[in-house]
Amino acid sequence: MNAKTTIDSLAKLSGEFTRQSETERANVQRLFEIQMDILPRLGLSPNWNTHQTVFLKSASLSRLIHYYELYQQIINVPGVICEFGVQWGASLSTLISLRGMLEPFNNSRVIYGFDTFEGFVQLDEKDGGFSAKGDYSTAERYYELLEEIIQLQESFAPMPQIKKFELVKGDASDTLPQWLEKNPHAIVAMAILDMDVYKPTRDVLEGILPRLTKGSILVFDELNCRFFPGETIAVAEVIGLNNLRLQRSPRQPYCAWAVFGE
Figure 1 (cartoon, rainbow, N blue to C red):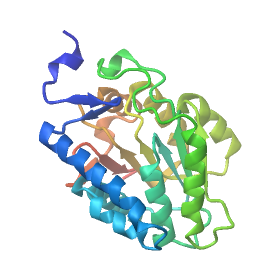
Figure 2 (figure 1 turned 45 degrees about the vertical axis):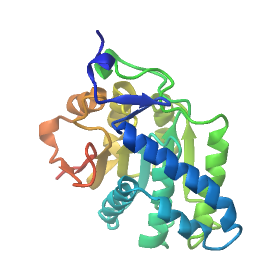
Figure 3 (figure 1 turned 90 degrees about the vertical axis):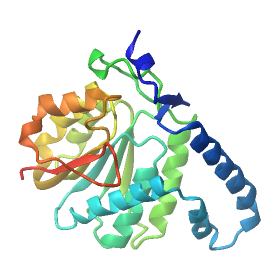
């Protein structure tokens, strides 16, 4: 019996883990159906986007608050934001909006999103056998569509003529060294590690360490998570868990963060 069959409370839907009950899944499906039905009725109203919050679940709102709290901590820290593991771009889009709210004239705060857009491409035995190649993939050609979405989000903030984001497509184990060489000036004020699995997480941590400053924020999305043990193992091997004062949000089960050098 492998690891996947030992977790009774865990389901895998469309390549993503969920702990939703059957009732919750049915309710989410019904909420989705209502949203799809009502969205065309909102037409081209300028407030169509605002009205969509009626469909926002508490868990999704909690994640938005979590990122708001994280972003506040780097306002006085120079450098860029790197998100490793973008998938559909929800967090990336949130960061773009937060920058426009919290530091609208800081055009040096470039936000970089790293992702394969093909899901997991390499797995290690340290990942525990829970994941498969291709998990967390996006739709075909979504990379191009997300580029347009983020560009539109930037257009709503000050200085929209200055592009302040970049999507980096490919395995971060391969693309990060190229990015570091291309951006020798870049200080990493916040690094968000949401790749879930061991090898790219370890490679990224090793690569960005020289670019962190005291006060940089390291954010981990699946730390202390038995379904993604590779992330915790990578942190333990590269930095050492007892070298970090890990903190967590009461609104997130597995998300943890630490101020580097603290």
